Length: 81
Image (tube, rainbow, N blue to C red; front, side):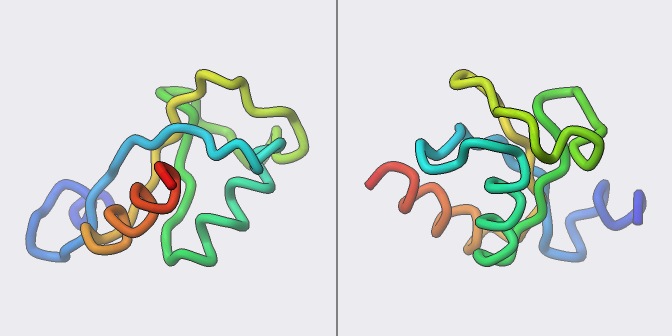
């Protein structure tokens, strides 16, 4: 898995996104991102999202996700709209 994350051969990368206003908890963000085809990895450098799934996401949170570029662009366009 780590080899895949650090390689450009697989077509998936780690991206940073801002919180969508409709996401109150990390679980909300995780489920919404999963529907797009992305996986929520962390809030900034803080791993352990699973342990705080029902905690509120800070308004200024930097959420790290893994997905392909097309999915990232789709998410980014939806978050801006």
